[in-house]
Amino acid sequence: MARKQFNSGNAPGIELSKAKINRETLSHVARLLTYLKPYRNQFIAALFFLFLSSLVGLAFPTFIGALIDTAQGKHTNGFLPASIQGILLLAFIVLALQAVVSYFRILWFVNVAERSLADIRRDTYFKLITLPMNFFSNRRVGELNSRISADLSQVQDTLTTTIAEMLRQAILLVGGIVFMAVISKKLIFALLLVLPVMIVFAVLFGKFIKKISRQAQDKMAESNTIVEETLMGIGNVKAFVNEWYEASRYRNTIREVANIAIKGAKYRGMFVSFIVLCVFGGILAVVGYGCVLVSQHEITFGELLKFSLYAMFLGSSLGSFPELFANLQKAIGASERVLEILAEKGEAVSINRNDNQVEQKIEGNLSFNHVNFSYPSRPEVQVLHDMSFEAKAGQKVAIVGPSGSGKSTTAGLILQFYHPQTGGIFFDGKPAADYSLADIRNQVAIVPQDVMLFGGTILENIAYGRLNASKAEIIEAAKRANAHDFISSFPEAYDTVVGERGVKLSGGQRQRIAIARALLKNPSILILDEATSSLDSESERLVQEALEELMKGRTSIIIAHRLSTIREADKIIVVEGGKIIESGTHRELIDNEAGLYRYLSGLQFEVGA
Image (cartoon, rainbow, N blue to C red; front, side, top):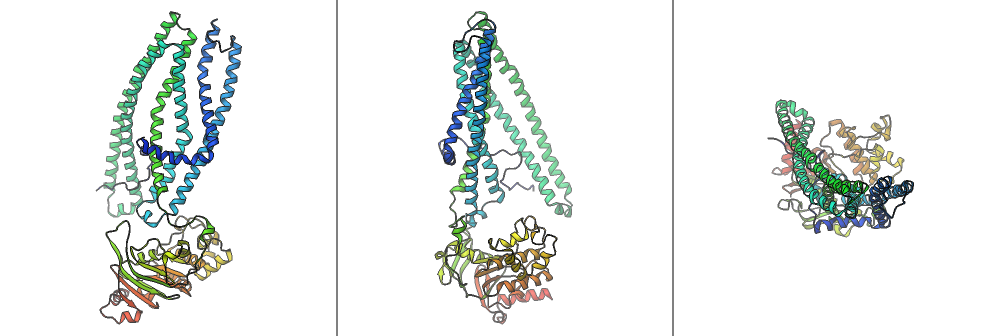
């Protein structure tokens, strides 16, 4: 009975999935790295400064060792000054050089990463908004938002931090081994004999602990989902007296979280004990062996200290690689998901405003010619069967029928959200394919049943119909849509913020703003998709008056459940199961005693009685 988590976006505490690193996945990363090309000079300079900074960092153990030996009267390095003051002066000069180099390295890496990431975000978003409707019907908004936010943030972290840090640690690792070998081949042999075995064991143990931690995170995410679902549906929980059930679900999940966390704590304790005993014991053994070499005068105390510092560099570098490698895997997985979007075939629309001007005027003649259609996501289910009808310019054509009969699908086909598998849609006698999508959509407007307003002001929402409209034109459209009076009653009038999806407005107010938006667009063809079905009587009267104003002088396709709103239509098309079974005026259809229209009318009037 437990509900599952359907949102594929990343919940808090859930790690992004990792991808295996192979030739194919690296080629995906290489495609994203092409975004670095415009900034390649700065990127190369940052890499050079990274290399230089790492080398300079490797010099400091040498300075410290030389200071110790010089203080003891032993000067073992001919490349450095023979005095303590000279060594200190040179060390501070090198330190100042590293400070400057590190500043520009970080600045340039972040600059390149942020600019290239902005380009990736731009192209991903541009691709998203130009993809066909079928793409969105197969994916959740949370998933797509996650790709632009979480996935690209992971790529950002890799470009700004992970790649640079991996290169830096690799230089420190190799350089440290070389410098340690120069100091003492016996000591480096002893260290390399002990350290890799312990690191491999630590990595394997760490993976096991991480797996347990991941289980705890998943369970915690499950518990968060229970809380979210319960609070969002608190009305249903109380109405069905199911508080006990939700409390039981949450209690059981939290108990599992605690049990997994305790299990993880046991293994983490064992891991820490291993680190304390083995790793530090191993280092202590190597240092002890170094002390023996000092006592035998094979190396100086300064060289032993220098070796110990390089050993710390080595251990730090080796210890950081598992996490850096894991971050790289996440970035590769994220880049694959982003590239999936970039590889999708978009619609023939442009994000350049000047390319979206109307080239071919549509007078308003519309016809469907033997159209058969199935949604690409459900090809086995045919939604429209051999649909043919005609709407002449200026006519009001109503489409009625039971739910699921294909009425809204017809609206989607007119807007070219989808394309029929067979048959054709014609505007002014020409196939839809002869027009650009911009030409069709610029001259077709829709007022849906569930109006979605953007979270800005009323003025901005009306202006969405024609972005270059003046305020006077917007107000005129609002007046014609019966919206000006209620807008003016707000303290901020047209600057009133409507809230997310227009939640601060009533259904009738949202409908009239949508009508004003359509009036401002001034389309040749208007689609009314059950625009008054969910309104009360007073709101319906105001909206209906606005719709009458909107339909004047343009072809109107009216999709309606309430048959009383379409009696004056020039033609009424009755569909059932995706087929046109009747067509005619209201009077003609009512006179057909065996017709579906007469039956539906009788049901509505009976209910109204």
